[in-house]
Amino acid sequence: MYYYLKRIACLCIVASCLPAFSQPSSSLVIIIDDLGNNLSLGQRAINLPGAITYGILPSTPQSQNLAAAVLNSGNDKEMIIHMPMESVYSQVDKPKTLSTHKKQFSVPEKTQTLASHQTQTVFAKNLHAALQQFPSARGLNNHQGSHLTALTDQMNWLMGELKETDLYFIDSKTTGSSVAKKAAANHGIPYLVRDVFLDHDPSPEAIDKQYRRALKIAKKKGCAVIIAHPNRNTLDYLEQQIPLLAEENIAIVSGSEAIRQQRREANERIKETLLSKAERQPDLSPSGIH
Image 1: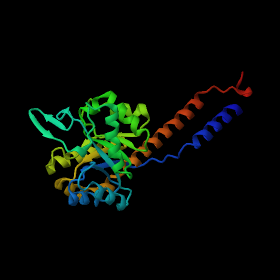
Image 2: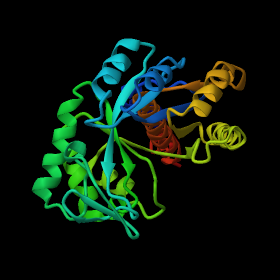
Image 3: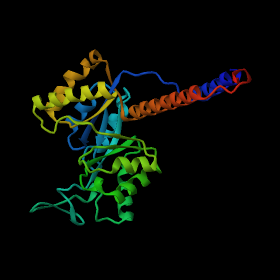
Image 4: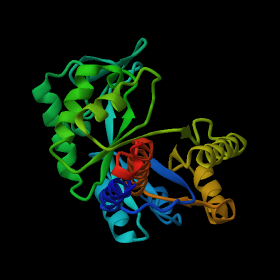
């Protein structure tokens, strides 16, 4: 029995060295994407209460002003780079020209869209051109990208570059065929995956339906990730609803905090596994031998 207790004590000491875990209330990550073109709507989004995460498009007219506004806003808000990526509706036929069905249109040179026709060198160059614009960014998510995020090589290129940074990745999940989560896990990149698009249909009724769906996911899973946009209907709705989240026992957390919560939960599972294994070990102490 002495040896059994000694084994348990040693395992408890090891487990106690892992970060302490306290069961959080349900969490909601709210990401406001597509910031950078409209200063007034962008600032209104930044004025929303809580630890909201803001996805800013590179090389847009107000991107630097809004990035600075997020940085100076406090309240645990943070910004991520909303990185343009090739979609199935705008696959690149040649540099600087996109096609959607029969429609052709030019792309501003500074968008640095990541696309499937690019070599790995050009791909990395475009990514780093965007990263350099936002030194205060905490993460990156995809703008569109329904084609690119389904490509294993390109997602491995992306995660390989992010591995040289401290950035996390959020998969906007614009396609059910996305391999971004798998690539992020393979490269050890912290990641989250979008659960709900809040305003794909911008009508107030549809926004409310999606928001209620997100709350149910948060209560069931412990956390839900919403992506929304700085539209007037969306901002009207969030301004009314965010102050009521406390009544639902749900807290808004940033992308970084949601990832920390994931790690704490993983550490707790490790502790439970260690203790469970110890409890299943036979008692080999002399007094336990008959």
